Length: 120
Length: 107
Image 1 (tube, each protein chain N blue to C red):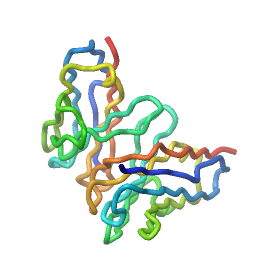
Image 2: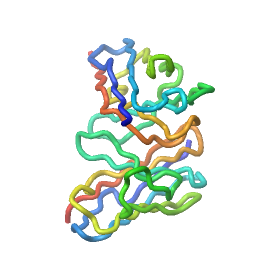
Image 3: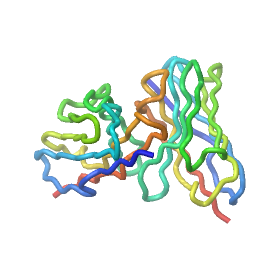
Image 4: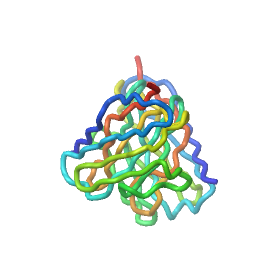
């Protein structure tokens, strides 16, 4: 069974930094793309970033490019999202999601999410 | 950036009836389109990818169709657990974007 467990969320002030982690189990982690998506309170879904399997190409939404960095450690079956220069509009539940292939496409398994609140 | 527009915003349907949800892309995404279901307080769940391929474990009453810019998700004979918000997402061009969602509620 695929399991994705996000951690690292919390409350912080604008301009701060945070690193989210997503520990995966139940599949051969290195073979699959991994994604981060978010959902602001009461709003819809927003895809944030993705990293392919094997080649480790990275992709970002315009709203976070230059501030967020996605990475993966296949030896730990973990994907990370380093978030810098955080803004109030980054407040959201952040979901980690697995893709069905090494290349980035849809997201076939999701974690339960971790809440990030940016507020002064 | 491709814009994904879902309609209607809210769909009121009686249990046992069929629901038809639409998703339009501002430019062609071929068949690189997915549908997700999200219930309150839960993570999204993949229903359909490749515009028409059901994900593992998804009941046959969920079906997807379309290509290019026009897509449809059909839920046949709605059950109580199907009342939720549904999102489409294109993965043909970066950045990948979601539609704004369609809420399917009990009539």
